Image (tube, rainbow, N blue to C red):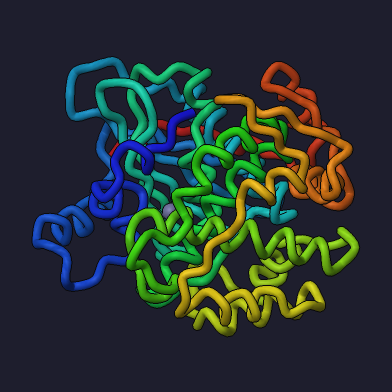
Length: 363
Ligand SMILES: [Zn+2]
Protein backbone atom coordinates (compact mmCIF):
# COMPACT_ATOMS: atom_id res chain seq x y z
CA UNK A 1 0.00 0.00 0.00
CA UNK A 2 1.53 3.26 -1.10
CA UNK A 3 0.14 6.52 0.09
CA UNK A 4 -0.12 9.10 -2.58
CA UNK A 5 0.87 11.77 -0.09
CA UNK A 6 4.19 10.01 0.35
CA UNK A 7 4.98 10.30 -3.32
CA UNK A 8 3.45 13.58 -4.30
CA UNK A 9 4.37 15.60 -1.27
CA UNK A 10 3.46 19.22 -1.83
CA UNK A 11 1.78 18.42 -5.13
CA UNK A 12 -0.90 16.64 -3.18
CA UNK A 13 -1.74 19.81 -1.39
CA UNK A 14 -2.65 21.42 -4.69
CA UNK A 15 -3.90 18.67 -6.93
CA UNK A 16 -4.42 15.63 -4.79
CA UNK A 17 -6.72 14.60 -2.06
CA UNK A 18 -6.60 17.69 0.10
CA UNK A 19 -6.57 20.64 -2.18
CA UNK A 20 -10.05 21.03 -3.47
CA UNK A 21 -11.98 20.58 -0.31
CA UNK A 22 -11.83 24.14 0.79
CA UNK A 23 -9.88 26.37 -1.51
CA UNK A 24 -9.03 29.86 -0.46
CA UNK A 25 -8.96 32.75 -2.91
CA UNK A 26 -5.19 32.71 -2.90
CA UNK A 27 -4.96 29.61 -5.08
CA UNK A 28 -4.28 30.03 -8.79
CA UNK A 29 -6.99 30.48 -11.41
CA UNK A 30 -6.48 27.00 -12.84
CA UNK A 31 -7.39 25.39 -9.57
CA UNK A 32 -10.47 27.52 -9.20
CA UNK A 33 -11.66 26.53 -12.66
CA UNK A 34 -11.15 22.86 -11.89
CA UNK A 35 -13.07 23.23 -8.68
CA UNK A 36 -15.98 24.71 -10.54
CA UNK A 37 -15.95 22.11 -13.27
CA UNK A 38 -15.36 18.87 -11.43
CA UNK A 39 -18.26 18.67 -9.03
CA UNK A 40 -20.80 20.11 -11.41
CA UNK A 41 -19.97 18.12 -14.51
CA UNK A 42 -23.34 17.00 -15.74
CA UNK A 43 -24.13 13.33 -16.08
CA UNK A 44 -23.76 12.19 -19.67
CA UNK A 45 -25.47 9.54 -21.70
CA UNK A 46 -23.07 6.72 -20.83
CA UNK A 47 -22.82 7.52 -17.13
CA UNK A 48 -23.97 4.71 -14.90
CA UNK A 49 -25.59 5.30 -11.54
CA UNK A 50 -26.08 2.86 -8.69
CA UNK A 51 -27.41 3.25 -5.19
CA UNK A 52 -25.93 1.65 -2.12
CA UNK A 53 -27.91 1.59 1.12
CA UNK A 54 -25.86 1.26 4.27
CA UNK A 55 -27.78 1.31 7.52
CA UNK A 56 -30.25 4.15 7.02
CA UNK A 57 -27.94 6.05 4.66
CA UNK A 58 -28.08 6.26 0.91
CA UNK A 59 -25.03 6.54 -1.34
CA UNK A 60 -25.74 7.50 -4.94
CA UNK A 61 -22.79 6.47 -7.07
CA UNK A 62 -22.27 7.84 -10.56
CA UNK A 63 -19.57 6.25 -12.68
CA UNK A 64 -18.73 8.90 -15.21
CA UNK A 65 -17.84 7.66 -18.64
CA UNK A 66 -14.28 8.05 -19.80
CA UNK A 67 -13.61 10.72 -22.39
CA UNK A 68 -11.40 8.22 -24.22
CA UNK A 69 -12.51 5.13 -26.16
CA UNK A 70 -10.92 2.83 -23.57
CA UNK A 71 -12.68 0.06 -21.69
CA UNK A 72 -15.08 1.40 -19.06
CA UNK A 73 -14.69 0.85 -15.32
CA UNK A 74 -16.21 -2.37 -14.03
CA UNK A 75 -19.41 -1.37 -12.27
CA UNK A 76 -19.27 -4.54 -10.18
CA UNK A 77 -15.73 -3.84 -8.96
CA UNK A 78 -16.46 -0.18 -8.31
CA UNK A 79 -19.52 -0.98 -6.23
CA UNK A 80 -17.61 -3.59 -4.18
CA UNK A 81 -14.93 -0.96 -3.56
CA UNK A 82 -17.53 1.60 -2.47
CA UNK A 83 -19.17 -0.98 -0.23
CA UNK A 84 -15.89 -1.87 1.50
CA UNK A 85 -15.09 1.78 2.21
CA UNK A 86 -18.63 2.54 3.41
CA UNK A 87 -18.68 -0.50 5.68
CA UNK A 88 -15.32 0.45 7.17
CA UNK A 89 -16.48 3.96 8.04
CA UNK A 90 -19.89 2.78 9.28
CA UNK A 91 -18.23 0.16 11.48
CA UNK A 92 -15.93 2.71 13.12
CA UNK A 93 -18.63 5.35 13.68
CA UNK A 94 -21.42 2.75 14.23
CA UNK A 95 -23.27 4.34 11.34
CA UNK A 96 -22.54 6.00 8.02
CA UNK A 97 -21.79 9.67 8.80
CA UNK A 98 -24.39 11.39 6.59
CA UNK A 99 -27.89 10.34 5.48
CA UNK A 100 -27.15 10.98 1.81
CA UNK A 101 -23.84 10.96 -0.06
CA UNK A 102 -23.36 11.79 -3.71
CA UNK A 103 -20.30 9.92 -4.95
CA UNK A 104 -18.91 10.59 -8.40
CA UNK A 105 -16.32 8.22 -9.81
CA UNK A 106 -14.37 9.65 -12.73
CA UNK A 107 -12.53 7.08 -14.81
CA UNK A 108 -9.13 7.50 -16.41
CA UNK A 109 -7.03 5.22 -18.58
CA UNK A 110 -4.72 3.31 -16.23
CA UNK A 111 -4.65 1.73 -12.79
CA UNK A 112 -5.18 2.96 -9.26
CA UNK A 113 -7.22 5.52 -7.37
CA UNK A 114 -6.33 9.21 -7.36
CA UNK A 115 -7.52 12.68 -6.49
CA UNK A 116 -10.19 12.19 -3.90
CA UNK A 117 -12.10 15.31 -2.91
CA UNK A 118 -14.88 15.82 -0.39
CA UNK A 119 -17.30 18.69 0.01
CA UNK A 120 -19.97 19.57 2.50
CA UNK A 121 -22.43 20.14 -0.32
CA UNK A 122 -25.63 18.38 -1.40
CA UNK A 123 -25.51 16.71 2.03
CA UNK A 124 -22.06 15.33 1.23
CA UNK A 125 -20.23 15.07 -2.08
CA UNK A 126 -17.15 13.05 -2.98
CA UNK A 127 -15.42 13.06 -6.36
CA UNK A 128 -12.68 10.48 -6.85
CA UNK A 129 -10.80 9.18 -9.89
CA UNK A 130 -10.27 5.49 -10.66
CA UNK A 131 -8.33 3.83 -13.46
CA UNK A 132 -10.24 1.57 -15.85
CA UNK A 133 -7.48 -1.09 -15.54
CA UNK A 134 -7.64 -1.21 -11.72
CA UNK A 135 -7.98 -4.80 -10.51
CA UNK A 136 -10.33 -5.81 -7.70
CA UNK A 137 -7.24 -6.53 -5.58
CA UNK A 138 -6.07 -2.95 -6.08
CA UNK A 139 -9.51 -1.59 -5.26
CA UNK A 140 -9.51 -3.70 -2.07
CA UNK A 141 -6.17 -2.18 -1.04
CA UNK A 142 -7.27 1.39 -1.67
CA UNK A 143 -7.28 3.71 1.32
CA UNK A 144 -8.35 6.94 -0.33
CA UNK A 145 -12.10 6.42 -0.58
CA UNK A 146 -12.27 5.46 3.11
CA UNK A 147 -10.21 8.56 3.91
CA UNK A 148 -12.68 10.76 1.99
CA UNK A 149 -15.71 9.21 3.68
CA UNK A 150 -14.18 9.87 7.10
CA UNK A 151 -14.10 13.56 6.18
CA UNK A 152 -17.91 13.41 6.15
CA UNK A 153 -17.87 12.64 9.89
CA UNK A 154 -16.26 15.86 11.14
CA UNK A 155 -17.38 19.50 10.89
CA UNK A 156 -15.73 21.87 8.42
CA UNK A 157 -12.96 23.90 10.02
CA UNK A 158 -11.20 27.19 9.37
CA UNK A 159 -8.15 26.91 7.07
CA UNK A 160 -5.63 26.95 9.90
CA UNK A 161 -7.28 23.88 11.38
CA UNK A 162 -7.12 21.65 8.29
CA UNK A 163 -4.56 19.58 10.17
CA UNK A 164 -7.28 18.13 12.42
CA UNK A 165 -9.53 17.25 9.45
CA UNK A 166 -6.68 15.51 7.63
CA UNK A 167 -5.23 14.04 10.80
CA UNK A 168 -8.49 12.31 11.69
CA UNK A 169 -8.88 10.89 8.19
CA UNK A 170 -5.27 9.66 8.06
CA UNK A 171 -5.36 8.11 11.53
CA UNK A 172 -8.86 6.60 11.49
CA UNK A 173 -8.77 5.19 7.93
CA UNK A 174 -6.64 2.07 8.60
CA UNK A 175 -8.35 1.43 11.95
CA UNK A 176 -11.76 1.54 10.29
CA UNK A 177 -10.57 -0.88 7.61
CA UNK A 178 -9.15 -3.28 10.21
CA UNK A 179 -12.42 -3.28 12.12
CA UNK A 180 -14.37 -4.12 8.97
CA UNK A 181 -11.90 -6.87 8.09
CA UNK A 182 -10.38 -5.08 5.10
CA UNK A 183 -6.84 -4.56 6.47
CA UNK A 184 -4.61 -6.44 8.90
CA UNK A 185 -3.41 -4.86 12.11
CA UNK A 186 0.16 -5.78 11.29
CA UNK A 187 -0.06 -3.89 8.00
CA UNK A 188 -1.36 -0.79 9.77
CA UNK A 189 1.38 -0.75 12.41
CA UNK A 190 4.01 -1.37 9.80
CA UNK A 191 2.72 1.65 7.85
CA UNK A 192 2.48 3.80 10.98
CA UNK A 193 6.04 3.00 12.06
CA UNK A 194 7.18 4.09 8.61
CA UNK A 195 4.95 7.14 8.19
CA UNK A 196 4.15 8.61 11.62
CA UNK A 197 7.61 10.25 11.97
CA UNK A 198 6.62 12.49 9.02
CA UNK A 199 4.31 14.29 11.45
CA UNK A 200 7.07 15.27 13.89
CA UNK A 201 7.98 18.96 13.86
CA UNK A 202 10.95 19.77 11.66
CA UNK A 203 13.53 22.43 12.36
CA UNK A 204 11.82 25.84 12.36
CA UNK A 205 8.30 24.40 12.62
CA UNK A 206 5.84 25.96 15.03
CA UNK A 207 2.66 24.56 16.56
CA UNK A 208 0.02 22.81 14.46
CA UNK A 209 -2.01 26.00 14.02
CA UNK A 210 0.94 27.80 12.42
CA UNK A 211 2.94 25.35 10.28
CA UNK A 212 0.87 24.19 7.32
CA UNK A 213 3.30 21.92 5.51
CA UNK A 214 2.12 18.65 4.05
CA UNK A 215 3.87 16.63 6.77
CA UNK A 216 2.45 18.62 9.65
CA UNK A 217 -1.04 18.80 8.11
CA UNK A 218 -1.51 15.09 7.33
CA UNK A 219 0.87 13.31 9.68
CA UNK A 220 1.14 15.99 12.34
CA UNK A 221 -2.64 15.79 12.58
CA UNK A 222 -2.48 11.99 12.66
CA UNK A 223 0.15 12.14 15.39
CA UNK A 224 -2.19 14.35 17.43
CA UNK A 225 -4.98 11.77 17.03
CA UNK A 226 -2.69 8.86 17.91
CA UNK A 227 -1.37 10.50 21.09
CA UNK A 228 -4.92 11.55 22.05
CA UNK A 229 -6.21 8.01 21.46
CA UNK A 230 -3.53 6.47 23.69
CA UNK A 231 -4.09 9.10 26.42
CA UNK A 232 -7.86 8.59 26.44
CA UNK A 233 -7.38 4.83 26.77
CA UNK A 234 -4.84 5.24 29.56
CA UNK A 235 -7.10 7.61 31.50
CA UNK A 236 -10.21 5.47 31.14
CA UNK A 237 -8.70 2.09 32.00
CA UNK A 238 -8.85 1.27 28.32
CA UNK A 239 -12.64 1.56 28.33
CA UNK A 240 -12.88 4.51 25.92
CA UNK A 241 -10.90 5.74 22.96
CA UNK A 242 -10.74 8.41 20.29
CA UNK A 243 -13.66 6.76 18.51
CA UNK A 244 -15.94 7.65 21.43
CA UNK A 245 -14.93 11.30 21.12
CA UNK A 246 -15.38 11.30 17.34
CA UNK A 247 -18.75 9.56 17.56
CA UNK A 248 -19.78 12.12 20.14
CA UNK A 249 -18.89 14.96 17.79
CA UNK A 250 -20.76 13.35 14.89
CA UNK A 251 -23.80 12.57 17.03
CA UNK A 252 -23.91 16.19 18.23
CA UNK A 253 -24.46 17.20 14.61
CA UNK A 254 -20.82 17.80 13.75
CA UNK A 255 -20.62 16.45 10.22
CA UNK A 256 -19.00 18.03 7.15
CA UNK A 257 -22.11 20.04 6.33
CA UNK A 258 -21.62 22.38 9.30
CA UNK A 259 -18.90 24.91 10.13
CA UNK A 260 -17.63 24.57 13.67
CA UNK A 261 -14.78 26.08 15.65
CA UNK A 262 -12.12 23.56 16.55
CA UNK A 263 -12.59 24.39 20.24
CA UNK A 264 -16.27 23.43 20.04
CA UNK A 265 -15.46 20.12 18.33
CA UNK A 266 -12.77 19.18 20.84
CA UNK A 267 -14.94 20.12 23.79
CA UNK A 268 -17.82 18.05 22.41
CA UNK A 269 -15.46 15.09 21.95
CA UNK A 270 -14.09 15.43 25.47
CA UNK A 271 -17.59 15.57 26.92
CA UNK A 272 -18.48 12.35 25.15
CA UNK A 273 -15.49 10.63 26.76
CA UNK A 274 -15.70 12.32 30.16
CA UNK A 275 -12.06 13.47 29.98
CA UNK A 276 -10.34 16.64 28.78
CA UNK A 277 -7.64 14.96 26.69
CA UNK A 278 -8.40 16.67 23.38
CA UNK A 279 -8.64 20.20 24.77
CA UNK A 280 -5.45 19.76 26.80
CA UNK A 281 -3.46 18.25 23.96
CA UNK A 282 -4.59 21.04 21.64
CA UNK A 283 -3.48 23.64 24.18
CA UNK A 284 -0.08 21.93 24.30
CA UNK A 285 0.39 21.55 20.54
CA UNK A 286 -1.37 24.50 18.88
CA UNK A 287 1.41 27.06 19.27
CA UNK A 288 4.36 24.89 20.19
CA UNK A 289 6.22 22.20 18.20
CA UNK A 290 6.04 19.12 20.44
CA UNK A 291 8.25 16.13 19.68
CA UNK A 292 6.81 12.67 20.42
CA UNK A 293 9.05 9.78 21.44
CA UNK A 294 7.63 7.37 18.87
CA UNK A 295 10.18 4.55 19.39
CA UNK A 296 9.18 4.47 23.06
CA UNK A 297 5.46 4.45 22.16
CA UNK A 298 5.91 1.54 19.73
CA UNK A 299 7.80 -0.36 22.40
CA UNK A 300 5.19 0.20 25.07
CA UNK A 301 2.38 -0.74 22.69
CA UNK A 302 4.17 -3.94 21.70
CA UNK A 303 5.01 -2.93 18.14
CA UNK A 304 8.44 -4.28 17.33
CA UNK A 305 9.96 -3.05 14.10
CA UNK A 306 12.13 -5.52 12.17
CA UNK A 307 13.25 -3.71 9.08
CA UNK A 308 10.17 -3.25 6.89
CA UNK A 309 7.85 -5.58 8.80
CA UNK A 310 6.64 -5.44 12.40
CA UNK A 311 6.00 -8.07 15.04
CA UNK A 312 3.12 -7.45 17.46
CA UNK A 313 3.87 -8.44 21.07
CA UNK A 314 1.18 -9.20 23.60
CA UNK A 315 3.43 -8.92 26.67
CA UNK A 316 4.34 -5.22 26.38
CA UNK A 317 3.07 -2.79 29.08
CA UNK A 318 0.41 -1.36 26.75
CA UNK A 319 -0.34 -4.30 24.47
CA UNK A 320 -3.96 -4.22 25.63
CA UNK A 321 -4.22 -0.58 24.55
CA UNK A 322 -2.82 -1.47 21.14
CA UNK A 323 -5.39 -4.22 20.72
CA UNK A 324 -8.29 -1.94 21.60
CA UNK A 325 -7.00 0.67 19.16
CA UNK A 326 -7.18 -2.05 16.54
CA UNK A 327 -10.51 -3.57 17.45
CA UNK A 328 -12.33 -1.23 19.85
CA UNK A 329 -13.20 -1.81 23.48
CA UNK A 330 -15.81 -4.44 22.65
CA UNK A 331 -13.50 -6.37 20.37
CA UNK A 332 -14.53 -7.67 17.00
CA UNK A 333 -14.58 -10.82 15.01
CA UNK A 334 -12.44 -9.10 12.43
CA UNK A 335 -9.36 -9.08 14.66
CA UNK A 336 -7.15 -11.60 12.96
CA UNK A 337 -8.84 -11.61 9.63
CA UNK A 338 -7.11 -11.02 6.36
CA UNK A 339 -8.62 -10.32 2.99
CA UNK A 340 -9.45 -13.98 2.37
CA UNK A 341 -12.12 -14.04 5.05
CA UNK A 342 -13.54 -10.65 4.35
CA UNK A 343 -16.86 -11.95 3.06
CA UNK A 344 -17.54 -13.72 6.34
CA UNK A 345 -16.51 -10.67 8.29
CA UNK A 346 -18.65 -8.38 6.19
CA UNK A 347 -21.56 -10.72 6.78
CA UNK A 348 -20.94 -10.55 10.52
CA UNK A 349 -20.74 -6.78 10.67
CA UNK A 350 -23.61 -4.44 11.16
CA UNK A 351 -24.68 -2.23 9.50
CA UNK A 352 -24.54 -3.99 6.18
CA UNK A 353 -24.40 -2.44 2.78
CA UNK A 354 -27.16 -3.37 0.40
CA UNK A 355 -27.46 -2.58 -3.26
CA UNK A 356 -30.72 -0.81 -3.73
CA UNK A 357 -30.82 -0.76 -7.47
CA UNK A 358 -28.92 0.02 -10.62
CA UNK A 359 -29.93 2.16 -13.51
CA UNK A 360 -28.25 3.32 -16.66
CA UNK A 361 -29.01 6.96 -17.21
CA UNK A 362 -30.65 7.79 -20.47
CA UNK A 363 -30.06 11.51 -20.46
ZN1 LIG B 1 -8.20 14.34 3.33
